Image 1 (tube, rainbow, N blue to C red):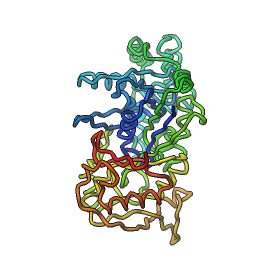
Image 2 (image 1 turned 90 degrees about the vertical axis):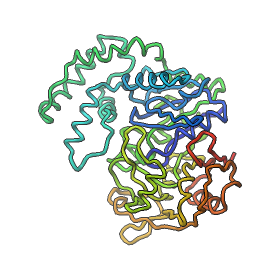
Image 3 (image 1 turned 30 degrees about the horizontal axis):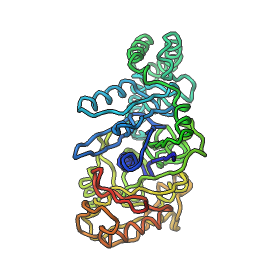
Length: 427
């Protein structure tokens, strides 16, 4: 049975939860795994007309019979984790089993404090973070002053690690940001309060997942954020603090690259991004506002309005290359029902030259101007279509053109938010 990776092929918010949910309901998925990021992610799933949002939790938490896993590459806010679990339980949702890696790093309240004050300090040069402490937690991890989940079960070690972390952080808060120092004991008490509830969930998730694959179980690795937000391969510095590309899955879950069978890139039929940074096809006109409105383009985790633009095949080809995609899952095709003519960016113009692949430098990408091909719209509601042949001819032409331009086959197409509103193009 396969190990499948589902990840974002743009700047996030592509509908990864829908693709994951489709896999979990059409195949027997035994484990659904988050491998990077924190509660800055957001997946929306609609089941029987009910909308559910997951942030830190894998979307598999809504699939009875599957085991959800928060792996070692994730940074975990215990407060956010339990708030999310409790919120779903209060809605009467039957939750799947959850396992949390002992080696996952902890987001404490001081990480969020540092995140917010440093963003304000940057002024007009801000990155556009969520302010939830993700970046500072990863910084502590790399600086080797991080706190891991396992440390919550040894008060002595926990106190030592908090002291080491705050020794530097408090100098920054008091001497640079003119803020009050954070007390070690307050943070120790904050984190110890979660230990008893958390302990039954904690295990060696790398061993768990490798044993599952050895036993022929199906493991779905669910990406957070997206390719263009990867700290190495995205639009740096306007990126997240982890590696949401396919290669990061192996590091973030403790499985080898030879275990991966499929890598599915989720991509919208147009493009959006949240926060700062270059965005070649961004629209500042009525079409951009129309995409925002029809697409409901508000961030699941942040509540921020998403910037909108036309489909960018250069970004799609780049995502296909750096992730080794075996296929795409195309979402929100139905949003384009309202256009007579639909532009697709097929290349860029940079300093008067045509560029067909991702520009090498930040300066070149910042100045890239989209070169468009145009496709006839279909001007009819496709939300009820269930096979590729059901789609209007112009919609079929659009999907096939994106497939040819983007570097991998299109496995499925979303034509609405519901679990059932999905077309399988290549079974």
